[in-house]
Image (cartoon, rainbow, N blue to C red; front, side, top):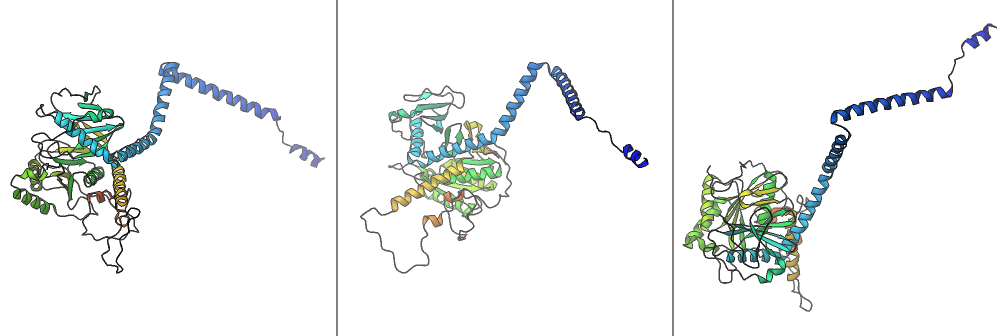
Amino acid sequence: MTTAAATHGSVIALGKPGDSLLTVVIVAVVVLLLLFLLLRHVIRKQGGWRRFRRGVGRELALTRRAFGEPLRAYRRHRRGVRALARQLSDPRGGLLVRRLLDAAAAALTDAPGAVPHAVRTEPGLAAVQIAARPLPEPPAPWETSDEPGPQRWELALTEEDALPQGRPRAGAHLRPLPVAVGMADDACVHLDLAAGPRLITVEGDIAARTRLLQALAAQLDRPGSGASVTVTDGVHPQHRGERLDTVLRELEETAEEHGETEGAGEFDESGRAATTVLVCAAPSPEQARRLSALAASGTAVCLADGRVAGHSWALRVDARGRVAAPELGLDADSAPLGRAVAAAVRADRRRLRRESAPRRGTPAPQRPRTRELRETPSLEETEILQEGLPDPDRPVTDPTRTTSGSDLLAEPTSATTREHTTAASSGTRED
């Protein structure tokens, strides 16, 4: 009996299965009721349901835009690379830009002080930006742009044949020297480096301005650009050029030999005179004074990395590649420019390879049996123009070898350590 009583005393009483489910339901209803009361209190503080819905929709839109901006920026970058590469790879594109500048300059003969200095090209339309006060009335087939922005003349590309054959105006000693600087919306922006003081400085973010300077130098070094480019030491870590003092001394001696210093860049009868372009980095105050003198005399067009004292055009670039020069009405995205110029240079080399290849039926030239030690490498072996870092498997070349301006588009292996003052300004500067 004792054992039975103990056994009955140790039995645990269990509730019915429906009791636990009912407890869960009651707790859930209480929690939902509390959440509803809390939400109602918050909505009343926000000003009602309507304002609350608008605020939530606005926050959702901002969140969606913030998460989608990187993808949209990437797509804009790719579109810019394709548009610039298509423009720069087509030889007719460069001829069109020069023809527009020449035609606009010829139409502005009777407007003293008016200078066409930039061109915007987009599918079916071209526009020439003109520095003038006030803007003259355009002759046919030009039209005045009604859109906000810098003052310009527009031309439908279907009426390109109606343009007269432009001739340089009196006093225009240098031929147009246009280079692409970036994209503005869907338009390719070109700047005529010979239209102003011929001393152009690239300022702002160190990495971005280095890429822009290299892209400008590579464009000027392409066949048919009308420029003879000299790149000095310090512009690119993989390029060992001449010292800036040496190049300046040679240009000054050449100017003295010609007597009139502007003879180096004048047009000849065929219109094919090459303009001397000097690309340098961080000139000293004395070197900057000599650069300004050479640019003012028309002996050379000077591109400088960093701020330079003197009368110049200043292109300021931020870390995202946005290049601006308010006094020129310039605001463009230069980030796609490097890859587009690289693609254009590769297209030039393929075109040169096709032109140099023997035609069918033409006997191929016999190669000498003795292999010389100094054998000319092929274009594939000498090509160092890359979109990324240099190929580690490529053999190291002689550091004293002089490379062309297009080779400067190779990305540097390390960030440059030069620190320059990057305050943007244009006009006369003093140290």
